[in-house]
Every structure is written in C-alpha cells, then in structure tokens.
Image 1: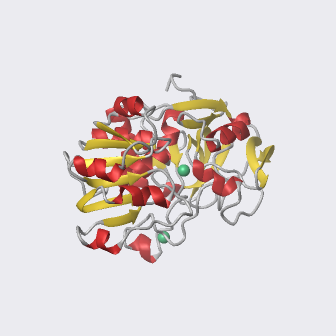
Image 2: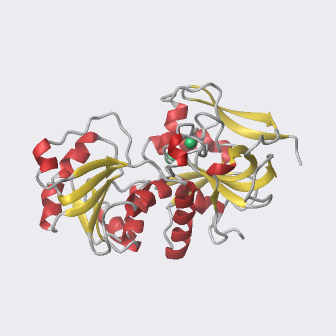
Image 3: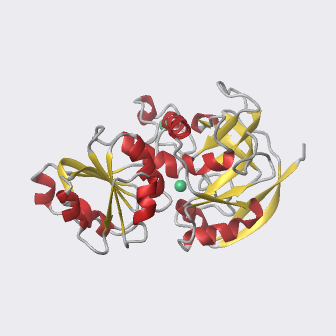
Length: 347
Ligand SMILES: [Zn+2]
Ligand SMILES: [Zn+2]
C-alpha cells in the first residue's frame, strides 16, 4: 500500500491544486477510507469560495463513498473493507445536550466535511465513525455519492413533512436536489407537483414521477397550487427568498414550506398568511446518520437515482466549475482509481 495519496485541495478562494499527501493513521473514533467516489455539491462553494471561515489549504467534498482500510482506537460497529459514505455533517459528538437528547443533526460539536476538516476530493479521507452511513451492495459508489447530501437532504425533509400518502406535495426547483425530491415524493405516495421556470422541464418532471407540472414563469404558482387543492408541503430546493414567498400562498391550512436551498435573500411572508391557515416556514438540514442509511436503502429499493456525470478526480476543478455554472445534469461525481466508482462496474 502506497504511503501517499493524491488529493485536490483549495489553496485560497477559487484556486484548486492537485497534491500528494502522506497517509496518516486514523485517530481515536475515526476511520480511514479509500475514497471511490465523491459528489460535487453546490455547498462545496462554502469551501472553494471561502464562505465559511476556512483554514487553508482544505480538501472539499461531502458526498463521499469509499472502503474503510483502517480503524482508529475505540471504533465499534464498522469493519475494515466495509463500504461507507460520509455526508455534510461530519459526525455527532455524542455528549452535548442535543446529542444526549437524540438530536444528532444539531450537535453543538458537529464538524462539516470538507470545511472544518478535509473532505472527499481525494483518494483517502479520515472520517469520524459516528457520522458514517452504510452503503447497500446494490448501489455503485458513483450512484450512491449524490444520495449522501442531495438525497439525504430531500429524503429527510419529505419524510419529516406533515404529509401523508395521497396528500399534495410540491417540489420547487428541478435541479440536483429537486430531481431527486420528485422521485422520493412519488415513491412516498404523495400527489406530486413539480414547479420550475419554463416549459422545457415539464417532460423531465413527469418522467421523474411528478403528477403535475407548474411553469412558474408562465403562471402564478401559488394560484396553480390552490387550484389543485393547496399543498400540504412545499419543498424549496432552489435558493432565493422570493421563490419561497411566491409559492407560500399555495399552501393549504396547516401546510409547511420547507426550505433546503441556501441563499442570502430574506423570505418575506405576511403574518396574516401565516396566521390565517396556521401555515409554517421551516428549514431542514440534511439528516442524521440513520436517516442516511434509510435514504440509501429506500433509493435502492425503489430505484430512485440521481442523474450523474462521472469525471476522474483529477478533473475536479472543471467539474466544480460546470456545477457552479448550472450546466451539470444533474450531479457531477468524481471517481478515483480505488475501485468501483464507475456506474455499471461490478459491485
Ligand atoms: Zn451538499
Ligand atoms: Zn453533540
């Protein structure tokens, strides 16, 4: 086994460099992973553009799939050779007030993968065992990667929404997150509405499982949702407070608008719209590791998958640029030489 590995790190805002790093042993509670695939997510801009306070250089990447090749001391429940995933949340501490109350997502000591420590744009990653997610055998590493952030985020938000089978649920934005959200919503048994700008997306939305398509550039999406009876939940996967506000009146009484699209724009809704009908605006942050397991199992069971384009790890900068330009259809996935990263390869 080589004593070094290759990684793509960001040396300062906007600048990628391919480097060779020495292999290190995992510390207590950590595992070392031979990375096979890593998705390129819009939140990687938090690292690349330096939105978060970053101690440079930093390896981005938080949709990581690979095989454990070493266990640190005290790690239980995981084995060398096992294929695992790591998402945005680096792993709960287990001892803070929120962890002790069972709220692992909001752990006070949670690090973010690729932001507070090096992530998956690399052949090797060190990860906290408490954040690991199991990868089912029937998903290739490249197919599993986008499910660890885009998949978990949308699956978790829909699963926790106050909607039951048969209820009207809308997905706003048909991109990296939205194209998965429509599939999950359909397989969870909802009456699914896809909302996007332009008529071009209609066909794809139907193919993904949407029962209805609303072109928000042509008609008022709130009125169109009310014409369908009003949505019990609207999952906002696009960023922009105005898009949240524009659909808010499309909620039925007791409905909730769940925002997973990060952006600086404020969300403006009036108090009468909140109060008369008891509607809610909520945020949702990825999900806990067990929900990560459930996301991948559910995806394998139902055939939900991300539309991906795989590129070699060395082309990370180009893949990132394509994603940021909105040209990815729909998720870019970096693959390494470590194994079965390519879709269709033997598991
Ligand atoms: Zn992400
Ligand atoms: Zn904690």
